[in-house]
Amino acid sequence: MPISEIADKAKEARKLIIDMAATPTGCHIGGSLSVIDLLVVALAKYGHDPNSSVILSKGHAAAALYASLYVYGRLSSNPAESYGKQGSLYTGHPNHKLPGIPFATGSLGHGVAYAAGWALAQKLKGTGGLGIVIGGDGELQEGLCWETAQIAQAQSLSNFVYIIDCNGGQNDGMIEDISPIRNVKERFKAFGFAVKEIDGHRHEDIFEAIAPDRDKPLAILARTIKGKGVAALEGHPDSHYAKIPANLAKRWKVSLT
Image 1 (spheres, rainbow, N blue to C red):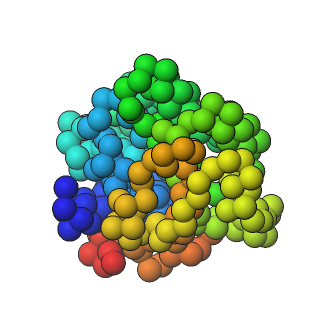
Image 2 (image 1 turned 60 degrees about the vertical axis):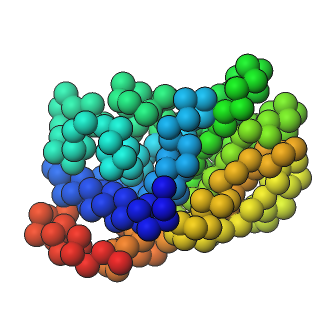
Image 3 (image 1 turned 180 degrees about the vertical axis):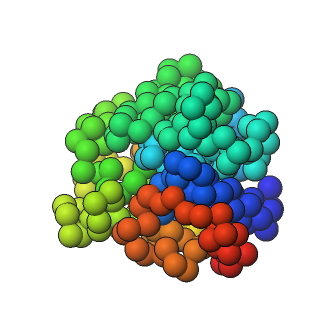
């Protein structure tokens, strides 16, 4: 798929995220807008490979996952029309009953382990498939992320790709003010990973980076901006969750950068 088409998909998905923030329940808009470029590229590259799985571990950004799957035609109904409603499959965390979502996630760190398990299964079966997980940098405070990194190294999972949405924020504020995570690149290298650092909003860079290392599991540190695309939200920790009126959503969609 051409990069220009991926960019169009990302913009379309951002509009859907804003629409989901304008529902009665609202959504985790800041992290959804920061991760959307990573999701649309990963799904463009590997979403139709039956042996590979793209898993969103930071499950509170489910709006971004639903939007991404919808713009690629994997979901038949517009998620913004029923997001958060009673009885809807479009729940606040990824619902495994929907196509393209192999695991329910949201308990932070669990999706990382699911993806490593998928990678191990594909390695044992010899399919060549990848286990790709997209997590958050605040999520790295969970011990399960590092336990999984140890297993990935011990099992030589060169088909395991761990993409980290490094937007600098978490539920209660900025990571730097709560529990700073130092030397992330060096930590992953110490766990036996190959490491790449990229701009998490440049589709060309993301597309090129999401490729397995021949010998090691891969960690991709994607530098992103919370609330990316909406000037009023960009970089603000209070954009973590929002419920907005329809008229504001309309203005934000028109002003998307």
